[in-house]
Length: 531
RNA sequence: GCCCCCAUAGCUCAAUGGAUAGAGCACCUGCCUUCUAAGCAGGGGAUAUAAGUUCGAUUCUUAUUGGGGGUACCA
Image (tube, chains in turn red, cyan):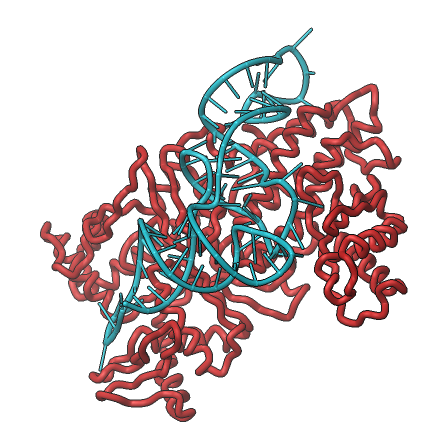
């Protein structure tokens, strides 16, 4: 709705005599106006096109405003120095545009682009329970998958289980030590979870199977943890699958045939050196064993072979050094740079009583995701994690998060949903149904502002996809909530003396309710009917 | 040493190069007989420092300061 208006405006402007002689004018883009401007849409087009047109931006804005004002959807169009154009829509069009009918049935994948995206995230080693940093990656990944799908872009979620290599053996030795009441070896796994797991070892299990057993149990735990966090994976992919089908040998053979690798000091290397990677990387060690890197190249090739056109890997900041070599690998696979994108999220600092909580995996003092979820509640966790841009540190204050009070911003948003549900309950008892407004002039200012905000829901999701971060959505939901609470306070919805206004305000409530519910769903937060 | 990320209000976070830098929490003043006061209305309070590019810089460039992370024939 908004986009068709944008194209219409652009069309009118470009075709007007005043502008038509210029060939490469910049696109007309819509933006929400700042809060002190009484308008629904702003354009900076007059300023961005001033160079080509070689006229004063203010004159361009003046001329453009005159053209835009003639459209039937537009109630007023003004201009301000140095060249801002502000559009105020008619109430009727505003209501219609705020509906955004596409929202309801657009959740089917692959309707917008031919791109097929695979987002890989968490992929923690199966050697212990998931910890807090995994929660941030999980929240990011799950939200991004859902947001892509909501916009009609095909997108799947995958968890890579690193179940090959010598981790299982080390895990087995650590478990064996725990079963005998001893400390695990120096380089083993010292977390308390192995003590618990040792109690569950089947009596008949030979010691050689301890590693396998421990790993399978831990994978099960991780799967439960993700479920409890409301994170869903399309597939849990095991590294061992690659070894079974000799994928590492095959990819190595291919790279050799294409002369993309070389031998030095008895090892096989891939040239990965770039501005961000200071050396080449080994694929096969001098003793003939493949590295993790080779397995990962095989894994990424496997993803492409399954039909995905764009791979997104979500990694913690402690793995960012890994990105340049993977980019080099993708190039060696013959893919365009755009076919691979790594999202690096910075680390999570837990704050308790004003102090940073020190976490050490070796000492076994780290806080697990499960503990955090149970302590703080899934909704608050997901909202916190989703609310911060990935490339900045996230401070997670346990004291604030644990408080189930209005100090916690997630309730501010959820409360809107609960309030609206409550209104509808009362409306139903009195026999009112929501209905879009019919006349064009009885929107209260607060209701108008609220509807105007609804215009930007879709664009917010698009920004999330563009930036690969859901944090724009949490900001939007908080702002939308604020406007609803103001509306609620100023405008009584149900008024038996005025059924027409009642119905149209119920309609506004319905639209807000749908956006809040959808937005919360996309970041994995529940939309309660009562609070 | 080299590489990456960050620095905005007392706290936690926003702001496709645009207008008077927005919210939430905390603090102060008011508001519940009416659809949920986990709310509303009003108030004080911020771009680390220094240059540069630009009609316009929180945003881009460079330097400085301060935080975090990485720099394996580990995974």
